[in-house]
Length: 263
Image (cartoon, rainbow, N blue to C red; front, side, top):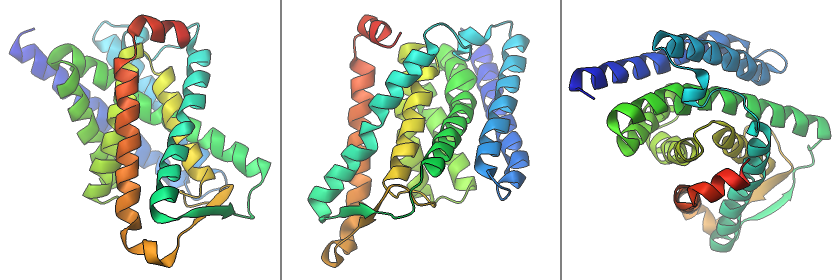
């Protein structure tokens, strides 16, 4: 592929991400209404899918070429990835419990309705983010620049969106950026979005259950005073350890075996 065509691909990929960010900014006004985050997740997922359809048609491609088409096996792949992905936040919590003497107590606010609402919300938001970053833009950048340049650029764009949403650069790069590498590896290895959506939704839902989100989950962490000074560092290190390990597992899993077990 000649240099000029590669840079056209890059401009289109970044333009796509910018368009999805605009869709998100427009939808964000609904966040404060009842079920606002679910509404934002659903509306932006639809908007991002429509943008994907427009961009792939512009290039003479199909939705399946960027992993965005629902095919036979998509739902089983999603379910398997979700169940596997649920182990990740609990592994991180387990490391934190060992190193900081954190323990978890019942939040007292858990209801089945809240759990179902949170699950639906995190699935919808994961659909939006995977379509926006690990669908069209990642696959097109991979075709022009190769796997890891594409992964790193998408991770940087993903982190930047989180900074615009109020995160610090450290949080965005070490949090969202590292997570993007895992989800991107899943997208590229399976050539679809069902697995990264499942992993992404599972991480956020599991984190919610463990009290890591703004709204109360099933449990809440209780940290002993003597461990509080370095708890943040340990949480970040444990997050990096879990995410890097998961990425290695996804990336080095035999491709043929992955297709068999995920379909």
